[in-house]
Amino acid sequence: MPRLHHSQFNHLVKVPGEGGWALYNFATGTLERLDEAQKVLFDAAPSLPADSTVVRRWRAAGFLCAADEVALARRVVREHVMGIACGRAPLPLMLTVCVTERCNFACPYCFQEPGSLHMPREVQDALVRFAESRLATGTYDEVRVDWFGGEPLLVPDAVEHLSGELIALAERFGVPYKALAHTNGYLLDQKMADMLESCRVAKVIVTVDGDCAAHDATRRLRGGGPTYDRIVGNLSALRTGMSVHVRCNLSADNVKCLDGLRDLVSDIASSTGTAMRVVPAAVRKHPVAEARDACA
Image (cartoon, rainbow, N blue to C red; front, side, top):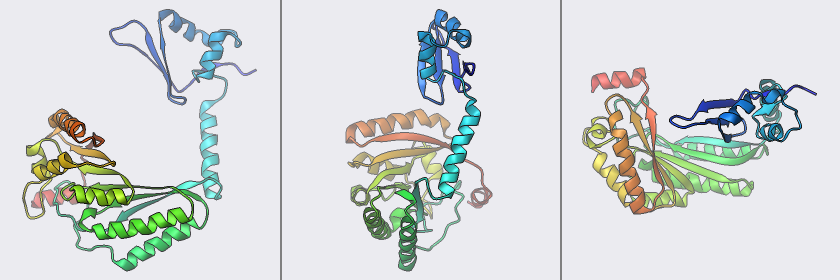
């Protein structure tokens, strides 16, 4: 019988300010608290009788194992990848749909080149035909759509039309449909939110970069002008079943605003009943954004 050993996915740490240890296994997601005596027993567990109660319990939880876990993980991943390549393993059909190049903002850190084109109807029709051809292969078990831009709410008709077509395809092929939308929030009033919800958008991602001063320093209208009050006003008035992720692009200039933003969003969520939370993200350098900032 192969010899037992401690799992390579274990993480054992001393609990700060308390006696005892926290033991977590990243493969199974199992968490256990150990006192000092249990810690000594756990350290010696590979040499204990394999049929003892404590060894059987820790093995069932994944803290002890006899297999080469890395080799096993590699085999599982390899078989899954080969299954996808051979058309055996189902996977979602994931579509990121840029319905417009235009944006009503001119954020200096944005890496996207500003454009003026909306997605024409013939391209929308081609996208629907593409999705239909992929679903017809039978290898996809779900349709996931990410509405993107530019600012997608500048062309709500395109979002509404394509949503109807893609939802109808998903229903025809008997697979679930899920969607989310990225927006700067400036146009996200109740009417727009109702439209998105009717299009089965389950989550919207809205960017607010801290407090009013920090946000308006970067998230400004094209041609100039603040945006914070309008966006926060929209969020404060929102009543929707969609969840709202408030993205905060963090830099050295606004990192101290994060706690205040979390408090604000928590208060808005409590008063509106809309599920909202703050999702921090780091601002990354990009030559296009740097050049745009230099010319601003």
